[in-house]
Amino acid sequence: MAEKVTNYQPAPTLFKDKVILVTGAGQGIGAAVSVALAKHGATVILLGRTPRKLEETYDLIEEAGGPTPAIYPMNLEGAKLEDYANLADTIIKEFGHLDGLLHNASILAGLTPLEQHGIEQWYKIMQINLHAPFLMTQALMPALRAAESASILFTSSSVGRKGRAYWGAYAISKAGNESMMQILADELETNTNIRANSINPGATRTSMRARAYPGEDPESVTKPEEIVDAYLYLLSDDSSEITGQQFDAQ
Image (cartoon, rainbow, N blue to C red; front, side):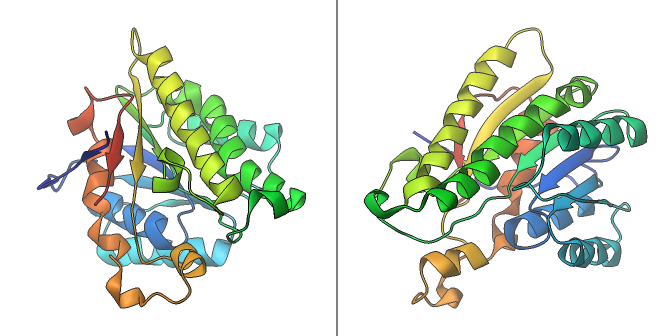
């Protein structure tokens, strides 16, 4: 049973001197969480495919008066092992450690029966939604271990916790993220400073949601900015004793 974060009020300097990496930081939930992290003192590494979108998030952080973020363009679909190694080397060189890692980037290529699921579409979804979080987590372990307390937060979905018709590779990739989180949390539970949890954002006003539900009134759906406190809690030291758990943002 997933838990909910309710009535959480993050301290203004909650992330002072903390370095947090957010994937998919150029729009939607990733952008909203990045801005919220910076408002509470974090230096945010904005990772995503499109530099222009990352720059827009960068500008929002600058306007809000947060610490200067870092932009790291990276295409997770085509990223190779050396790309993840270069990312890890850059973080160690520039910051010395990593306090938090939010696996937010993912794609949904449409709803289709498994019987008709295109193989190229399957590979692309698995690469971005499942393989990339694994490869990135593995590469960034030394930077996470260098922090006093580090959080890895995987983005889940209701269809990742209970599969539903037509959600295909997306649902399966999210179920894989849940399993990866649980395995990782179990492996890191003793003699380590790293914890791992998952969060299901729920119905949120994003471009992915619009593609899945094209007939839905976007005004009826929760804005990303309204769910960021749950992310702040799970990425902060306030949740340092919690690991291996599933959370719902709303």
